[in-house]
Image (tube, rainbow, N blue to C red; front, top):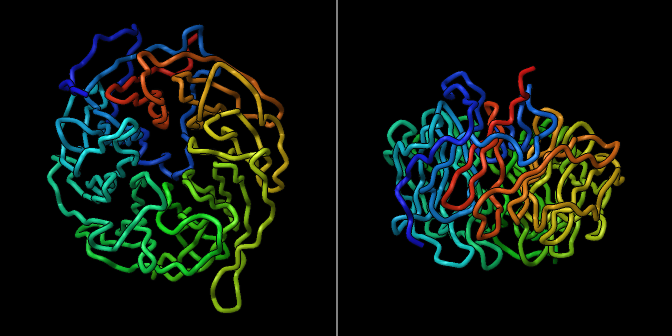
Length: 429
């Protein structure tokens, strides 16, 4: 695929938004500020007109890939295969013009290749993981590389199956947490400023389900039972390690499958929820303190694949209900009571969308972005399924998988080489 230089397309909307600057709402990385796919935006449209919300602008030049976006301090960051390499790219958030690009590693030459992970922006640095396991930290202002590590070379890392690294690094204070997937280094903590190793976490055998290696998920932070811990979905299932030193705390094997464990876990209070596809299902576990200062993961419920399996579009917790797409390579919208597993609605609801659905939440509504390019606005209520508008992203030729971002009154949709930015604010009376 020949990549074009990033060029600003003609504006197609009469309405414009102020440029995003420091102090504006931000989306610093994968699934937003709390890694929960929930935007804190208000004042957004509760119904879309026919054809969807106004398109503010479009740019090309992102390259091949399925990475989502970080939006911080007036800039947009993403990853893409272009110009013969895999690049971390910074754009101006006001118009999409290129600010800088920084090489991460080799391209992934495959029909469905290209990077999957999303950059994380924190403390003047942008940290990203390429598909070959190249972890880089660059200066947000200039794109100048500060440090790099290799998950396979430095830690003996491996992924569980044929696909490559898809993780979005977690930055927690002065540390970067990533998942090499090695037996002796399933997770590692690195110094954010230098990339030097702080600890590595060995994971014991969890059970027969799944495969050894890293999954395709990303780490979240939990304070369950008063212990700060990093929760991750790896090849053998759901695990938690102590944040201070990487000590293995608990594991849960039943939710793993042998092909790909993908969706980011949901954590709240003393619970962790995970779901995988490939005819596996979903589970809620309660994390209870053990006598040996460890944690025991007690299964609260398990939902079989026919009830709820999230392939790779992710899920969002709103109130006491989980919303997400159900089905292998399907995104049938579904609402489940978080603490009981009771299905409030959904499971096999058909709409204009087809294939897996990437999900985000903002201001009382769900943004379902389907594999066929259909984007739907759905009210987030356990009372029933309520569509509030839809549109189709132009020129979709590959699976439309990149996760949506809602920040600053805008809906950002990466579509391979293109980036579309829509105005989703509530219209003034």
